[in-house]
Length: 383
Image 1 (cartoon, rainbow, N blue to C red):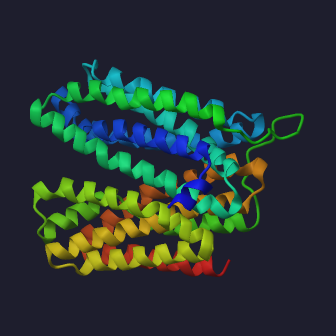
Image 2: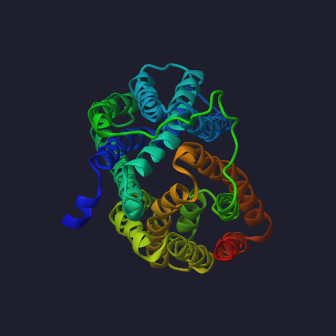
């Protein structure tokens, strides 16, 4: 473990701590937003509209912000502005009185995420030696998942003491958010950034060619079978996992992701990125096939454990592979393109999954997801 820590630059540790604190704050709020909106009188359709606008905004901006960071060498500025914008929304949520105000703040929050994600990933790649990038990205994702586990647990504890006082949760969620900014400002002093391109005029936005485009195609095929986790939770309830245990199942999965993400990324440093990514996608195919045939609650618990393993094997590995497939001065836009492809694939993935479930049953839907993961694995193996 000491050797692993020595290979993690201080900049990566600082950015991991920022993600831990920011996600703790975000996940204190996010699960409660539908309940809060209903309390304000919002319709189900309006709640769906908010999330649709928010996620599409983040996906589009990730592509643009990565290009801007590469062109002007402002990776740190965009990262800090993105986190700062998101932090600003947390206490303001406690003051809203109408659903449209939540829409505006949710839009600003996702605007911040869209601005920071690609430049931040480029900073992590730039700060890390090539043979340790899997470890670095795995560590970062692990810290992110740890925050995603802590946040809902803190929110639940607050609501036990103050039932349905969502505004109190939003006020208190501002504390870890502000701490994340303090860590970010301090940690950024240790972060160097790639130099801007040397062209006289801004280079047009374009995808790096060659193996990177093939990799994006594989990612898109896989994402088409990677539907919303809401379907997994729905299936869990059908099989017999009690409603009271669903939050525990969710938090437990995030904790397991946090524990496994760093070793998963390190494995890609040793075995090779494509090999570990293919292994992760095969685990995903096994998990989705398992959900199609699960018949007892303990099956669901075991499958969620395997699902955490899939995340550990793929999240850090994918990002490390992006960094290796493009020149250093194009990493910002490459990470932007990667996140954009994942974002635009998720909407049709969930829509397709839901339509197949409704028309042919849950087994057909889960087997479709497993089949697309297998197809993506075959395509990546033929790179």
